Length: 47
Length: 236
Image 1: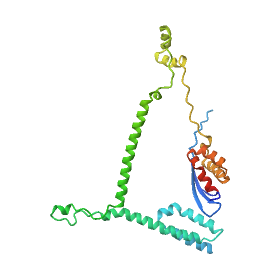
Image 2: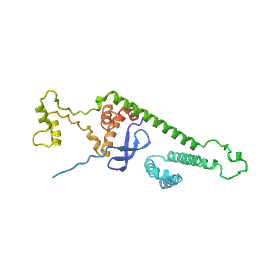
Image 3: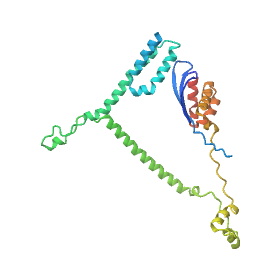
Image 4: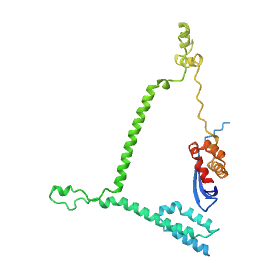
């Protein structure tokens, strides 16, 4: 139906969230996406 | 020159939209306009913009009228009040405003949700009473039935140790401690940067490979793994 997406433009980029704009392969439809992940775990270094 | 003119026209069209819509979408719509204009005609975008303009103002205007309707329909206090009592208790002829209907529906839903929660809590309590062993501690206590009083004494208060400390030690030395519950497994992928995660999803999605996409979803978004067929259909 879409033929997949092309990544076109990056929007907001935060620690656990990333958004941007995609374009369908087979048409001129654009879509806005937001990807959320778990926040990164804290890493402690000891010397 | 033509591009500059059409771009300015499209920007004017965007500025005619409600302010909240402009804040949310105007920049992206203008960016998409530039993308399309570099390759093909922008006439469809003008059509889309006009439809969007009408829709935004009609919908938002209708919503505003809906909310304001309640105030307009409410009878003004102190107006047309005569000396007789029935004139003070007049029932308004206007139907119930839609906003009041929505309010009433929300309250009814809230009430039903509270009833459901109460029922759920009660059934959970009954389940706990039916299976009391589930609430017991998993720490295995020492078996003192087959021991002599001397052994028990030693076990309860070893020489030279504080009773509180001996209590802790007894479980370590006599009783076998329960195996520590391992922390829930979290896929490493979940803690990566969202941009990397998105790139992996896009690779899997564009490949059309069911197993690849399923592996990604199961690892990172288990709830979405059930909808993989829908995703693959849209990727086809």
